[in-house]
Length: 127
Image 1 (cartoon, rainbow, N blue to C red):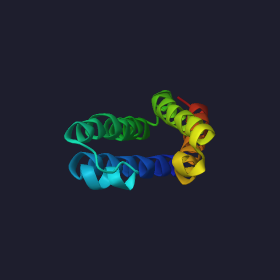
Image 2 (cartoon, rainbow, N blue to C red; image 1 turned 90 degrees about the vertical axis):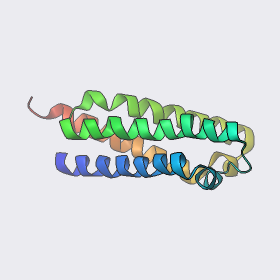
Image 3 (cartoon, rainbow, N blue to C red; image 1 turned 30 degrees about the vertical axis):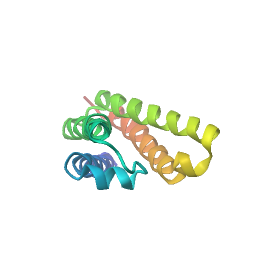
Image 4 (cartoon, one colour; image 1 turned 30 degrees about the horizontal axis):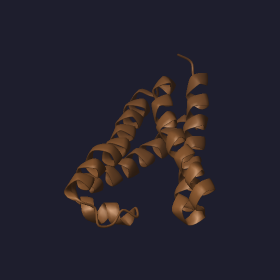
């Protein structure tokens, strides 16, 4: 089960890397795919710094955690995703399901559950 959890988290990290690098190098198109259209040069800078940084930071932390099988490294990714989900829940309440991105919410919840399961599983292994 530990191997399965490591493989799944590595796949999530690869997805985050893909999204993050897309935001860095194909900024306008990647941002448009997230609903951010007609952004200015300053907006592109913000997408590269803030949104790409979110995904790339989460990916790198997950990869180190997977390589080391270290459950203590999973909490920063859990925090990032929990805060993103909180923002989506606020958007859901204020602007409705289309603005909140219900599919993205489901993905975030799934990843949060995977992180919690992995953290619990890895904590049980003999040290």
